[in-house]
Image (cartoon, rainbow, N blue to C red; front, top):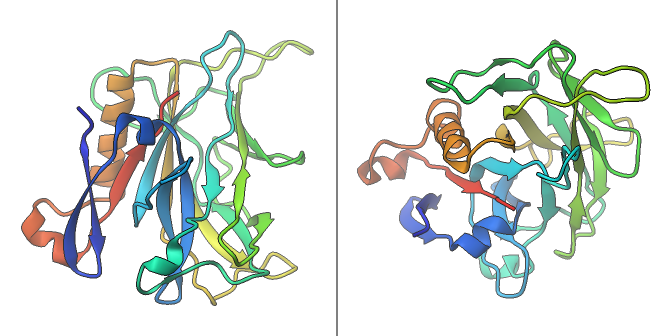
Length: 252
C-alpha cells in the first residue's frame, strides 16, 4: 500500500495519496507562488496531478553492472497549472538554474542514519549536454548552473543527468561505494551573467536522496530522516496550518 504524502494548500489540510506507479515516474515541477519559485512533484504521463511544495526527492542510480547514472531529477511543468489558484508558470524567458548548496554527503546504510563525507575521491557529475557540474567532498556552495530557459506555457520538460563517479586507475573508473548519497539544491532565476535574481525569488532548499545499490527500506529510512531533520514537517495534522512539506520517492 502506498504511503500518504501530506502537503499544505493555502492553510488548508490536504492529504495527497500517490500510487506506486506515480511514485516511480515523477519529476520535480517548478512553479511560482507569491513571487517565489516552489518545487512540486509531478508524475510523467497523461492525467498526472501536481503535488505542491515537495522538498525531498528520492531516486535510484541504475542497477545495471558498471552503470552508476540516472537522468533524474527531471524538471517538468504541470500542464494544468492555470486551474490552481495563485500558481503560475515561470515567466517566458526565465533563465532557470540550479544552485548546489552543500557538499555531496554519504551514509553507508548501517546503524542509524548519519550523513558524512563521501568516500575519498567520490563525486557526482551533473550535466545537460556536456560540461558537467561536479559535486564532492569540500566543494561546498557552487555558482548557479543554467539548465533551461522557461517557455512560459507549461511545456518545460528537461532531465539533468547525474553520474556517480569514483577514482580508479587511468582509463578504468572505480566502482562507487554502495550507499545513500545526499545533495542539497535550490532553484533560482538568473540573468545572463548567472547572477541570482529576486523576481521571482529563489526556491527554498530541497534535497535529492540517491540510492546506490541498497535495499529500498534503507533508502526510505534516509528519506524519512532528511524529511524530519533537514526539511521537517509538522508533527501532527493540527500543526499543518503553520506550514508543511511533502516528500516523494522515485524508484526504478
